[in-house]
Image (cartoon, rainbow, N blue to C red):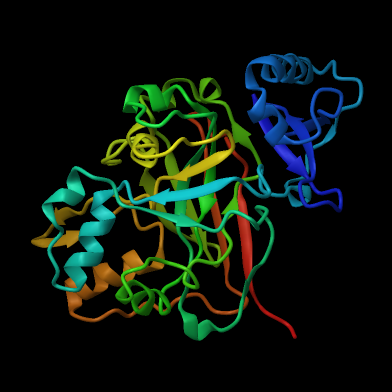
Length: 336
């Protein structure tokens, strides 16, 4: 099934069930007001939502209405936890290579992960509000999952069973603030503003054969200022699958229902073309594009996002149907 949260003037919005083709929706208020309620009582409430989903898809829901992504908050407008990994080692390798720095061997065995702010997520069509373009505003197209309860020391296979929902994320980064923060050896803070999520979150069964052992085998489409810049495959080159990422998070603590785990920037390896490396599938963040330019030509040419820039992030299934709806945002300045 597909779920979304509609704006209603509150912090947590109203849960709606969305049709498979994203054309219609129905309030779930007779079952649950908010998505977190469902995650807390999944075995009881999700079958009821599934029944409503089937009725909606059959065109028999009495109070259905046209679905509007602009009315959506993030599926979970605020969450108990947002932990973002870096599961695509090609991305790590590119960034490190552009700085003439090798990737430590343990990075291939122990996932990278940081804990981001989860108290104020952006809806899929909300503006990216920034203080200054000098901060190096960047998009990062990612896959994310929402979990049920995960006991401490769960195995990767056990952690896979905890995945309730899958969605897309734009993990916005302020690239020029990050180096000084990391130099303190205490992680990200100001360099990671609010993250945006796709209009709908979907259950793994909805993804069919595209969902394979914790990896989503679909293409991440990224448009920057209406120009297609990325068509990266999210599945084959994901070094750590979501079960491994969740197990990493749960190594020394319980992970509670409503936690969101991100994949990190979706990234694909280069191919050799006429004696020169090429990245035919593009990129899912500007930092990676700049790293490629540095590796090839010794200098980054591409600038980060400016006020007025737009970014669109979307995945389509084999039939060309949007799976999660699109993240479609514009960069705007903070107004006093």
